[in-house]
Image 1 (tube, rainbow, N blue to C red):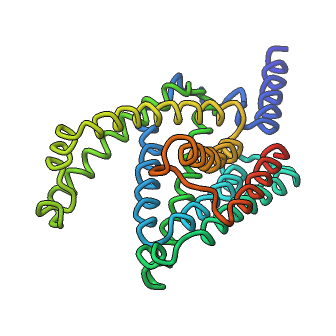
Image 2 (cartoon, rainbow, N blue to C red):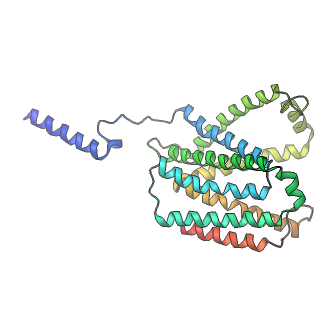
Image 3 (cartoon, rainbow, N blue to C red):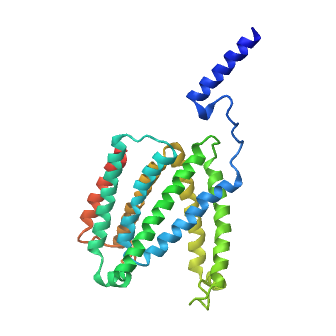
Length: 292
C-alpha cells in the first residue's frame, strides 16, 4: 500500500509539473527578494537610453525627435509579447497603431511649423540626420526594454514594490553617472580642456541661483514621474504606461499655450498655423488610449 501511494504521488507530481512547469511541486523555490544587482539592468537602460536620445536630438529638429519617440509604443508591445508572454488581442494592436498615427500627426504639425533657419542649424547633412534617427529609435528600443523589465520586477514571481524599484534604480543610476562623469573628465575636449568638466559644472551650480532652484525641483519631478510610472506598469502593463506617457507631449503643449497667452510672451509657444493638426492628433491619441 505504501509503494502504491508513493507511485501515485509521483504521478500526480509529474502531471502537475507538465501542466504548470513554472509552479511545479518540484520546482525551485522562489527567492525571498530581488537581488540588488538585478536593478542595475533597468538603471543602465535608463542612463543609456536617455544618453542616446539626447545625442540624437543634436542632429535633427526637436519635432522629428518627438515624433520618433512614439516608436516606444510599438517596441513595448512587441517586447511584452516576447518577454512577458502576453497575448495581445487584435483591438490592442489596432489601438497601438491608432496612437502611433496620432503621434505622427503631432510630429508632422511641428515639422510644418518649424522655421527653415532652425532646420538648417539642427538638421545637418543627410548622413548626420540618418545617424541621429538611428540613435533616437535605438533609444526608444532601450527604454521599451527597461519598462518591460520593470514590469517583470513588479509582477513576477518575486513581486517588488514600486518604491524599492525606483530607489534601487536611483542608487545604480548614481553609480553609473559617477563612472561616466569621471571618464568624461579625463577625455580631452572643449569644456575647459575636458570632454565634460565636472568641476566647472559644480562651479556653475554653486554660483547660479536659477540652477539651484531648477535642479532640485527637476529631481523631485523625476522621482514622482518614475514612481507613478512604476505603479501604472504594475497595475496595468508596460504598454499602457507608454500610452499614458505619450500624453505628456500634449500637456507640455497646453502649458506652453497658457504661458504664452496668459503669463508672458517671452516664454511658452503661440497657436501656429498647423496647431489644428496637433489638436487632431491629440484627439486620435485619446481615442487610441481609451480603445486599448
